[in-house]
Image 1 (cartoon, rainbow over the protein chains, first blue to last red):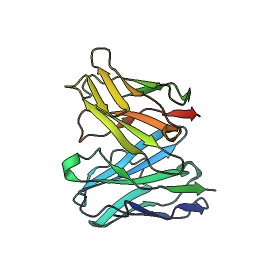
Image 2 (spheres, each protein chain N blue to C red):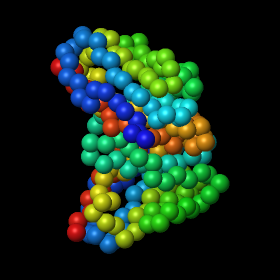
Image 3 (spheres, helix red, strand yellow):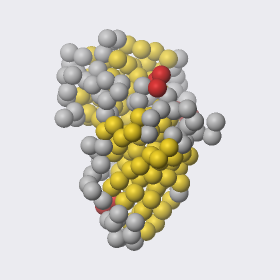
Image 4 (cartoon, rainbow over the protein chains, first blue to last red):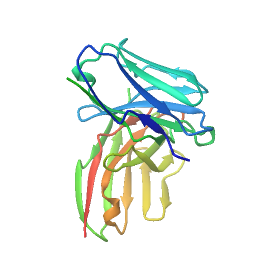
Length: 115
Length: 112
């Protein structure tokens, strides 16, 4: 298996632009997570899905952030409009049900820079 | 909410020596404590976890101990090797299904 796939790996955009991050979880995994990592705040869980349904989105910082999972093999995290403070590495992770949702297999991350 | 503190922030050890990272947590209801290893340019990888009904868990050169009374848990790496160099994160949650609160991370450098 190729593992969790994220795209793009790097994204540089200007303030106010829309940004869409993409994730393909490991096939057969029931849970999908979006995390954000910064020097100041460390690793933060933004939202997670179980069987394509959002379970907990309390970590989503504000209305500018939205996440969707239209099917079991694809999820997006969208930021509109983007701001410089959104600059971070965004990780997607997935887990099989048997491991429990926290035993996540992380993707390589998307490094987002908002100018 | 839960607050997890992790020490030290950096740790330099000679190859073959042991490394110990310590974490404390604030929520007495936390029952699940995983540890992650993050190599440069990669996502975190779960290396070991422990639940509150267990005081110690071992997996080859890695061990984790938990003291629920004192609300602290530790990662022990024995016989360190250069490939152990990475950033290590502790985390805590009320259940293995709940939201994780991560520590700030420890940069471990193993010198040959």
